[in-house]
Image 1 (cartoon, rainbow, N blue to C red):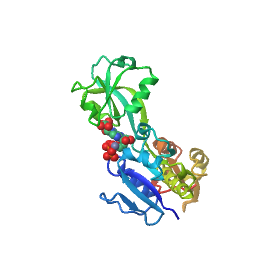
Image 2: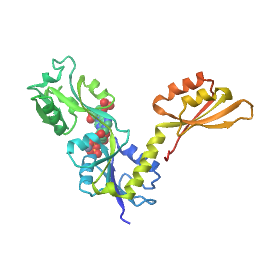
Image 3: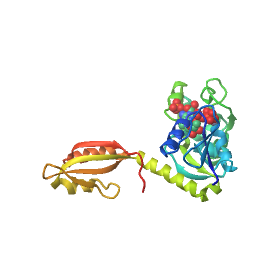
Image 4: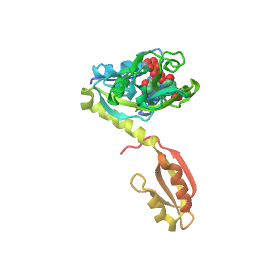
Length: 283
Ligand code: PRT
Ligand code: ZN
């Protein structure tokens, strides 16, 4: 059987989470920083460790069947690849920023100004879309210092916490794009059964991350109230307790409204609430 190849970042912001995701998919492989390729021992898959900028093209050319990379890199390299799954990590936004108290505060103020960036392709499209005529200065890194050095009037760079902008006396005023890590595939990869198997594993890991397993005790008479609050995977499992008129309810709760749900459950009479992480959810 043909072995698949997946390209992930060798080192950098996406490396650790990419490796972790593949491990949670049950794949066994050595994660030596020195190796460029690592075979998975229990699935017909080889892992290629590359610079993130190279990943979209490797996938477009079919050298790798799959890749994990930020959407910003995909858009910048303008490749033709299939988006197979958003992965929920490596979240950031590409923003335009200027020095504090600058007179540039709205997009149209950028007309006739210069913007330093490592994302000239995305920025050019953005400026065109908004009919802005600004000069793009493509640099290879440390974009945040260019206004201070007098190299440009503004910058267009990735922001996650905002700490870098702040410590360089910059303030963002326009969002160019938001980005997260995605699983991409080559044209042929989408038809492969092995790829589908892998996507399903990835999805079951992601679903599990978004949910918590919850066990709680409740007086039997309050059960209808609780069942309404907890749709669960299908419906909650109800187990009798030694104490008559009490039951234990087993269910899952979504991460996004977790605390809200817990407080509703307490109000509905739930006691002894135990919360556990879920490893996988296979539908
Ligand atoms: O060596 P290689 O080419 O593989 O890596 P790289 O240095 O090009 O990329 P790397 O590891 O820095 O980032 C990989 C990917 O992580 C990016 O392509 C994004 O998809 C994603 N990502 C998420 C980020 C950030 N958050 C981020 N904050 N990439 C870069 N940054 C930088 C940003 O450029 C700025 O310098 O972090 C700084 C801002 O961070 P805050 O937290 O201060 O706002
Ligand atoms: Zn890079």
